Image 1 (cartoon, rainbow, N blue to C red):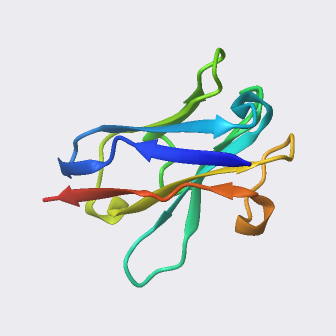
Image 2: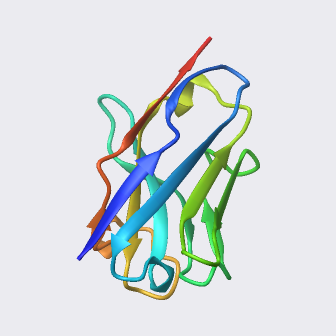
Image 3: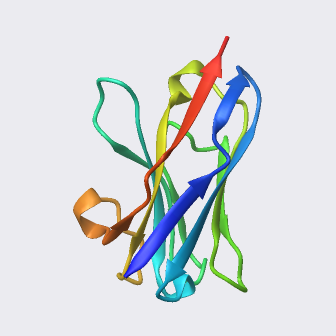
Length: 124
């Protein structure tokens, strides 16, 4: 089993930045591919970014491309999502998810483990 814990959410003004972190206990996190999802009130959960187990490939949704960077720590596999130039539309609960698949996966059903989420609120 893998337990994922997100941190780094909070209240930020429009144009500001946040760095979300995802840490894991249990199975070696560095062997898992990871995705960041978000769910805004009244909307479906959507993928924001993803990274392979070795950090070799990344993916960004169009909504954050150019404003977000996903990365992972080579020593412990922790994954980070740096978000810049935040907009009100970025307000959501952000979830970290891990997959045993070795490639980039975009669907929620492709992920085996989920964190509890961290709230990001962007105010104008």
